[in-house]
Structure formats: C-alpha cells, structure tokens
Image (tube, rainbow, N blue to C red; front, top):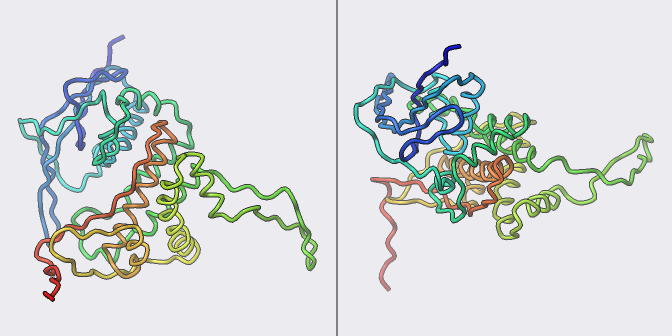
Length: 324
C-alpha cells in the first residue's frame, strides 16, 4: 500500500526554529507570506510568517486536531483561517523566510506571550496533553477560537459589533471549567404554592471565588481574575443572553502615546468608550484562555492581567500641569 505524502502551509505567528517531528508530521518554518485585502474604501497588506507541515498518512481528523491545537497555544486564529479558507484577503508567498522563529522545546513563553514564563514545557508535551482532552474540553477550545468578526478591513463597525457575544461565550467557557454550583441539601416548601424550593448555601460570587482558588491557589490572583469575570457576568452576560443588549459605545479621543485601560476603567467605561470595551473583551479573553490552557494542558501558569494599551499617534497632547 502506497503512503500518502503531502505538505500544507499555514500562516502563523511563531514558526519553529529548525525542524520538529510531531507524530506523523514534521513542522518547519516556511517562507514569508503577504496577505492582501481590499474593500470599497481601503486596502492594505500584512506580512506574515508561515509554518510548513509535511505529513505521511495523516488523516483529516488528525490534521484538524493539530490546527486547533496550534491556533490555541499560539493565540492566533490564522492557522485555523488558513485551514478553513476564510482568510480576509489573498495570500501570495515570497522566496525568503520571515523570521520570528521560536524555541519549541521551551514553548510556554510563546504560549503566554508577551509574558516571560519560567516554567519549561515543550510544544511536543503540550501537544501530547491536547491529544488526551475529552469532547467537552475540545468544544471549549473551539468556542474560544470562534471568529466573531466581519473582517479586518470592514466598514461601519457599529452595524456588526460582536463584543458582547464574545464575552458571553468566554463566560460560558469559564462556567464549563468551574462546573455548576450545587444546591444546599436542605429543602423547603413554599408556604403559598407548596412546591419545594431549592437554594444555594453561599452566594454565586463566593462559590466562584472558592472554585478559582482551588485551581489557582493564589488569593491575589483570584481577586484579579474574579473582578473581570464577575463584571462580565453581572453587566454583560445577563443583559445580552436575556435581553439582547447591544454595544453602543462611542469613539473617545486619546492622548498621544500609550493610553492604559486597567480592569476598573474597562468595566466602568465599556458602555460609552470603544477603547474601554476593547479592553474588557481583551481582559475577558485573556482570563478565559489562561484558565482553559490549565484545564486542557495542565500548564499551572496563572499570570497577571496587564492593563490594555491603546497607542495613539497625533491624538490629544498630554495635559501639562501649570508651574506653581
């Protein structure tokens, strides 16, 4: 029986240094790719690294699983878009490599980029763990990777703002990781209708904190994460799922340079400030991905959530304090 050989090229953020054998396939850095896109009012090009996957007798399911894994651990949906043929533009390839290769033997700093992670785990070890996850965990990874954007160069974004629904999905993943809060064993009958009424022994907030503490083991990190998770639960998840809330923030002029949005600013301003809403979506995705990486790949890494940075050129000059 003849072997089935082939090579697939995927856009990616971080190709490997040198070649890497992963089961039935070999990974290596590919040449630079140019992604060109054009709309009625804009056009542009993005220059991207690529990863080459050479395989022998690789089934479609095995290839699909690797695509999901690589997109998940690199926090980049371009491999998935390449595979699904949904890239926003036309791809052409150059004859020269792009660079940006990473050490796949020490891969966690790439997984959690731009953070530097002291714990050492290889790409192969993470991939082995991913191959052992169950159907529910795989479903959570697929939900995290759902592409709820109308394209990178679309017009009239106010007509297609998926920010709230993204956070609803992220919250559902966190619920999938934490599980359901159990009712108290004690039951009571309603004095009016006679039906048995169930109740929770502690508040949902305290229960969620306790579950996070079991996973993370650090009270300060729990407080940091819960501020984001609970803010989304109370202010966005309920109103979106039950009342079809839709985001209507406005563009707020920025100061020149870096504008930092911490968690408090994001939660306070997401309804009125587009940048605050972007910050909250980014924070919620970050927390969700960190918890899901640990749930599926047993990374044991729970980094701080850094302020969201919006860099502005030609914005409002910084306010100078008058000399006393």
